Structure formats: structure tokens, C-alpha cells
Image (cartoon, rainbow, N blue to C red; front, side, top):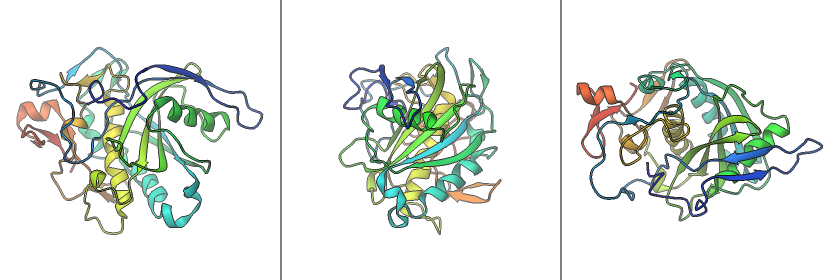
Length: 304
């Protein structure tokens, strides 16, 4: 991870409480946002991992996992109204989350257990909403959670009361000089626990490009799909920062970031293909059945 050692510029106070401005005549929702977790650092970035080597396998930190993920995506920004800058990204991300459920890629995280049970292969996708107001944030988890709460208050998203709701927010903001491609976090909307994630616009961003050769997909979609797999897998295994990670804070996505064992992964339920990084498997490393990460540790699983 990276979460305890690479902080967002605006995250000096990790827990923040704000009130969301009302949408139409609806009442505002009180939110509390946690810190950013599992930042995807750009390709070739070593990260501020401190001294010494991390433990090879991840350990459990006595907290919750997500046995499933009930996902609703938000596309936020003025350019989402135009077909030129958005291209295939909305329809592509819809296909990604639809196909993720019960895929071999989803099953790479199934060994992990915690409060709430065991990570399972089945997830649900309720589709997306588009907010054409000007996007902001990325450097502040409260800003992104406030956008999720606005959509809930407006009735565009039905809040999952089970605590397994996952709300990825895709903005049309370019990364610029930010040292991360995406992150996930957690929070409260009222008294309901939620997981959410943030994504920059990654079109033409060499640092966040998986260099996919899958035909028919734009570079921007391929980049978003790769980091979406990273963040969703980490949200399922370490939703609150008390689940599974190694001694340096690296979650299962972090430990295999920017390593690809196969040209693409197929989601068999909808026959879509994606170039996605692997996810760390403790059991795979122990059995010697994984492929090597950037440190040569053979614990990554491609899901193919």
C-alpha cells in the first residue's frame, strides 16, 4: 500500500465529517470519510516503502472483509455529456463490472476471510449514473464520498444498507502531477457503511497505461479497467484498512501492480477481455503456483 506512507496532499486529517449540500428539496446526508487506501502508483514508481523488506504474504488485521460487492458506478464531470471525450468508457466500465461477478479473476481473492465471513466470487452491478456538474477532488476522500451521497440524496443511487455497497467515481479530471492513478476508501453516509473509489481520467496517461493489445478498446478504457480491478479487489479484502495487507501496508492489488502474466483476462459470463494486473494470493505463494510480482515473489494470480 502506500496508504500509510504515501499520503494525498489534502489527507493530513484522515477522518473528516461534512454535510452534503441538498439536491432539490431532499435533506442533506451527513458523511464521514476514511483515508485513501491502496493507491495505484504510476508505472515504474517504487513508492515510499520505508526501510527493510515487507513480509512476503499478507496478514490479517482483525477487521472486516466484503463477502460481496454491490456496485453502482458514478461518472462525474461536464465532459461525460459528449460522445467525443467519453468514447467507450461508460459502456466499457458497465461491461467490466457486469462480467466481473463469478469470473476467475474475482476468484483470485476468495481465500481471504475476516469479520463478515469470506470473500466470495459473486458480485452485483446496478449500473451507472452520470453527473454532469463540474468534478473536483481526488486529493480529498470527503469530496468523493460527498458526490456519492449527493447521488443517494437525489434518488439516483439506492444506498446498500448491508454495508457491501461499492461506489466507484470516475471523473473527467486528468491526473496531471498527482502521484497516483486511483484509490479506494470507506465511509459512512448517515449510519450506513459504504466503500467507494476515485479514478482520474487516464486517456493518454503513460504512467497509468497497461499497454493493452485488446482490440476494440480505447486506451482510456483499458487504463480504467486495469485500475478498477486493482481497487475492487482491494476493497473486497481490505475495505476499512483492517483486513489483509503485508507489513509495509501493501494490499493484494498493490503487491502485483503493473505485472501481467497473460495478454488479457476473459470474463466468461459476458465474454469480455481485459488486460488486468494480477492479485496476490497467499496460498499461491506458499504453494509456488503464482507468477512473480515486480520483486520476483511468485504469488500473483492472473485469473486466467
